[in-house]
Amino acid sequence: MHAWSPSSWRQRTALQLPSYPDPNALKDVETRLAALPPLIFPGEITQLKSRLAAVSRRQAFLLQGGDCAESFDELGQMPVESTFRVMLQMAVVLTYAAACPVIKVGRIAGQFAKPRSSETETQQGLTLPSYRGDIINGADFDVAARTPDPQRLLTAYSHSAATLNLLRALAQGGFADLHRVHGWTADFVRRSPQGERFEELADRITESLAFMEACGFDADKAPQLHAVEFYTSHEALHLHYEQALTRHDDGTGRAYGASAHMLWLGERTRAIDGAHVEFLRGIDNAVGVKLGPSAKPADVLALLDALDPDQEPGRIVLIARMGSERVREALPPLLRAVRDAGRTPVWCCDPMHGNTVTASNGYKTRDFARVLDEVCGFFAAHEEAGTYPGGLHFEMTGQDVTECRGGAQELTDESLASRYRSACDPRLNGSQSLELAFLIADVLKAARQRR
Image (cartoon, rainbow, N blue to C red; front, side, top):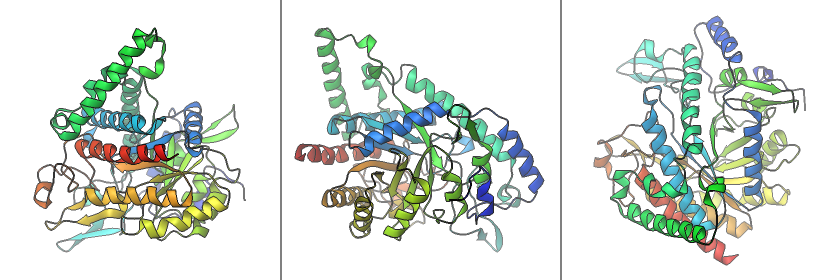
């Protein structure tokens, strides 16, 4: 392999990057970002990789979830807290069923850029650049909003720093204490069947804690009961931003992407000779790779060789996004090829992106039943291959949105318009997320009992 540097990606073909009208303004912003403190520190990044290594050894499970694309307009305590809360609930449900630790990774504090299938968008005869996420341009359809603005990179940094500050407080400041498990349920979820089921589980947890304390267990000396580890991730799409936030650690001699604990390659940017693979191969973070139904075994093995030549446990997360109709056909050849090559990455299922459809009223949506069906197909493929289905990756929010059809709420096409708030792709709401966690918990419990 040729020598790597944080800027060596610039010698490769870079897809999905915006064209800025003033390159000097972009360069000035990159210089300013490079002088700012890192958002994430090497020790945290190393810790996540050690946790993911446990997943690769079948000793833990990965739960990754959050917004499709974060919005600058929604910075505040409520959106962050609601997503954190429902991820805690999902993790508790999965932990109870699988009897193993659940590693919690949010799509948050940096998920501001989105790949697009077209460079431009046309409305009423006017053609403008496509909306690529708040880190690049605005969603409003006018020339000013759609013109890429490098100042947005600084705004993204500021928003990420504020969100990380809140997440660390929620994770370590008492909110995640298991003694407060009853307080995690949002009101609109509490009134649902899955809310009632979670309350029953919370009762059992509370009774178990009381029993242990009655037996002399000192809960005050068990930090695992009072706080959680929570990590952040986003797609490493905007390479100018990622390079500017790359930091060299003198202690290890390695480079780290200081914008998130984990970064991932998208389906559109995983070309083996592309700029995004070149950048990610040199940083020491955990790296995810999205794999759609067109992925071939040779593609996956080449990516593993490029991104993880030393076969470091916890380094690579392969995120399958096949679609419910393709997963049972497209995934098994990849599982067999990776298994036969002696590789043990974390295998994760993204059942959202392959199941996006357009509703009769024009809204982009996803069907709850198809999401669940892809998860079931993912688990079935792993059981057949003798490999470990190590995680799940969802676009979700803790808020009471109406963006995905179906589930116990029985949301229909007509329901979508009432609270459709996503800036890009549809998300599961808090109730649907918890419902899905319980259904997946049954699958995990059955798999545990077969072992």
